[in-house]
Image (tube, helix red, strand yellow):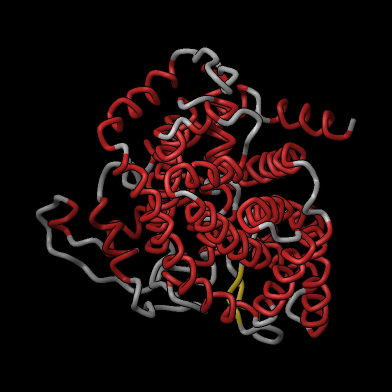
Length: 473
């Protein structure tokens, strides 16, 4: 009964209107930004993101831009790339992958807006944490002046946010049981203990681990997926055209695949793409607020960097692996991370199952930790820069891990439905911010473009001018 209710609510919130709303907003913002985060200036964005991975960054902030991005990618590169993509293909067919790409391409501009808002309206906590921070509540108060709404939102975020992490533990316990036969109770105990020890170290402890673990595991997973693509290299063009064709025409059922309409492809492609890259949910506001940068907009290059790596690279590796091996057809009833596990098992034997189980475990672990940082900011907002904040955050660590440890055995369908509902609520709030502060975002964007980008790169035959800091900073 509860499962059916959650699924119905999720289906309503993720109906055609949400799909059109997300895609339409992403396209609109991309036009406003003159496609700077989509097709143009890719070299500039690469230079300011992956090209500065080992630099501490200039300007004010708590951690480097790359470190902040790794904390953000801990949220994005996870079970969504492995289990979420599989779920999208099972429910929406191969065409869902196209809409995942499409949303990711234009979601880059949406993510950039979030990052700019987080940088612009961040607050420095000196007494309790020595950290720059921001989240949806800080923006709601500092940008819109909605103090009561900000308090309500903060309570909702830190109370409900942890429950989305049950998706992570469900995937981990299922994969490790399938690959190694491990008792789920043992798995969640170890996962809970290691997560607690990591988050207890605060921002710098979390960030230090994320910047080492996330890139390394992502590259290992990509190499494993590329091996499958090489095994089926001659079928790769056919798989690509199947994705494009299925995005615009219904796909009939075959084998264990029940078939899917174009509407299904769009709905699940956009929804799982969103869960994977977080473009529009407001998490970009939180993770990037702590970054050291000389201008709010420079950090927004990660709007391109994160979404490109997460959706265009990692999700594509999973998608092509599943489609090329026909796993979504040959294994009826298998869904989520278990389907990806079977994909790697078919390709590499039992070693493949072990590999994907370990990958899922590490990705889920980093996502749980990254998500904690996001939820903690709501606690920080409620208690302010006081001694009470120190006490509250320690207590919150225990509450945060309860869903992860004790509710891992809820059905995947229910967990994904709950996650979709919360994501939809976060989206509506975040888009209120973006629409309301659109002029401010564009002012900062144009200010950065005119002040920090060389005239010849802008295509203007005028001497470069160096200005001071932004007025009002």
